[in-house]
Length: 155
Image (cartoon, rainbow, N blue to C red; front, side, top):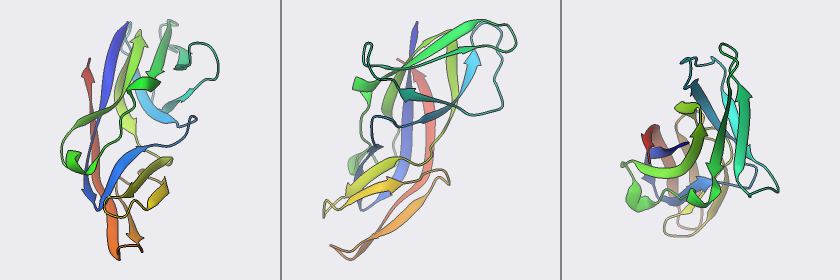
């Protein structure tokens, strides 16, 4: 069992507290089988499961070697990306992996943020295009999240 951290990096404009929203947030990942090295072409996603230990989980069988592998999202490690983190890698979440290694991440819809000065909530942010822009009417400023990238580290 190995823990991997997903580190998030972006340039923030007048926003802070960028985070996955809701208990059913989907983490879209590409996962490599630790036994044979197979990486499926399709994005796979993990979502929190109700009950049990309260962790998020996905179990999959490798199509190449038939090994059963699993990944748990460690919900208590989810950390927002803040204005002071802008343009630096910061671990947003950790995954506990058994037989799998995350190799790629595709941010999608389901992120949220708030205005850095105003606190205006922005609850429906889609980062699939690696950029997002809006306007904060409370302070008459444009807001945005740009150049989204990521990396994985062993924890």
